[in-house]
Length: 181
Length: 386
Image (cartoon, rainbow over all chains, first blue to last red; front, top):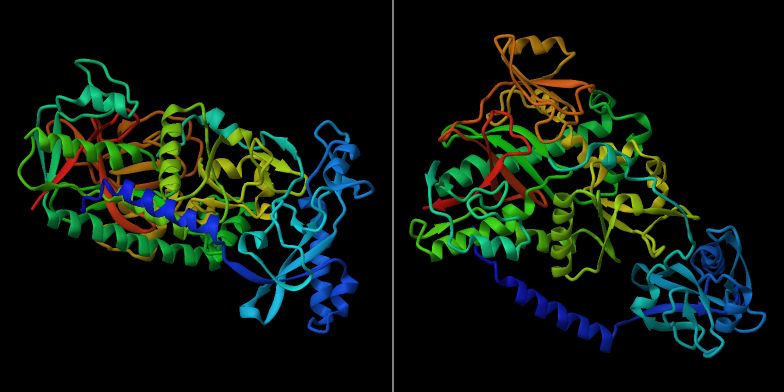
C-alpha cells in the first residue's frame, strides 16, 4: 500500500551508474593460466592434482564451448594456419564443423584463495597471438602462471554447439490455447 | 467491502491507447470495468486477505516438503514418475519462485476462503499491477474517489525487486504460446520488469526453443538458455517431447517445477488433510476418496489441472446447478465444499491476492455474472479507505 510508481526513473539511473563502473574499472580476480598441463606441473606453487583436475575439466569443455566455423579456412583466418581442428559436431545440414585448438587453460581461485577450480579452455587469435582469450572472446591477459584477470573473463563459457532440433515444446499450447489462470 | 458505482475516467480512451488495450466508445475496454470499484478498509486487506495469503503460502511449503518424502502426494496429484526428479531437483536446488495469485471467496466479513492457488501461470498481472494503479491516480485526480484513498498494490515494485534475488547470471529468456495475445502481453510485461531490474531479456515462443548437441536449450540465435521464464504450465511441459532434456540441460525455470504441486487443484485436499479446520481453507477431497462423502450432495467439482473455470461444476443437493465447458473433463477431479462467491449488484467478485516472492503485495478483483469465474469476467478496480 505504498505509492512508488515513479520509482522507475530512479532505478534506471542507479543501473546506468553501476554499468559505467563495470566498463571502466572492472574488478580483477585471482586466476592461474597455463599453456599446457606440463607447464602447470612445473610450477612449484601448484599441486599436481589441481593441475590435472583443472586441465581435464578444460579439455572436456573445449569441444562444446570453442567457437565453431563451417570451414577450416574460416577458422584459420581467425586463429591462424594449422591452429584449427575438426569439431565433433555436425552442422544442421550435416556438414563438418571446425574449431580452434585449445591453447591453454585458466582456473579461477575458489574458497577465498585456498585452491583453484572452475577452469576453462583458452585460445589465441591470429592477429593478437600474445593474448589468451576465453571461448567467449574475453581477454585473460598475456601472462601465464598465477595472475589476475578481469572478473568477467572467469564466467562459465557458453556452449557454441549448434541447435540439433526445435519444436519439442509448444504442442499443448496449440491444443489448449492460453496458459492463463 | 462495498461495491460503489462511479463514472469512468474522462481519459479512459487515452489510457487504453497508451497501454495498447482495445477500446470502443460506449463499450470501453473489454474485460475491464471501471463503472464501479470495490472499497475495503485497511483492516480487511491486512487481516482478512494479506495475512491469510502469507499464512497459506507457508502451509504450501509444508506440503512441498512432505511431497519430497511421501510419494503418495505426487501420485495423487497425477504427476507421472519420469517427472518426479525434475520437481525434486528444482526444490533441492532452491530454485526461487517469483509470482502467484491466490483466489479467495470473501464478502468483507469472516475469513476469506481459498478457492485455488494459481502458482504457475497466473495472468491479469498487468491489469492488476499497472492499469488498476493508473486508474486510481487518474480517477483520484478527477475527483471521482473518496479522499485519501489507497490501493493494495505494490506488485510492480516487488517484481522488479525480486529479480536480482533469482540467481539469473546471464540473459533471461521468456517464452509463451506466442499465438495468444493476452499471454504475450503478460510475458512482455514480465520482461519489462526484468529489464527495469537491470537484466537482459530475450522473448521467444515455446515452440522456437531448440536443443543443442550437448543438451542445452537454445534460443533462435543458438545461444544457450540458462534461465527460462515460461508462461506455460508445467503439466504441458511434462507432456511434451523436450521435457526429457530438462534434467541434463542445466536450465533453471521460473516458476520452478516444484510450483506445479501448488497449481494442481489436488493441493486443496492435501492442504485440508494436513491442516483440517484452518479458517481460510475449505474442506476438499479427491473424488475417489470415500471421505468425500462428508461433503454431502452440495459441492464444487474441479479437474486437477483446469484453467479459468473450465470443466468446473457446482452441485447443489445432488443436482448439477452451474457448470462450464472445457477440454479438461477427462482428468481426475477434486470435490470442494461449496462456498459461493458473494453477490454485489448482480456480479460475483473473486478476490485474487498477488504474492511476489511469497509476500502478499497486491490484489485484483475479477467479477463474473455467474458463480464460476471464467474468461469473460471483468476486472474491477479496488480502493482502500482508512
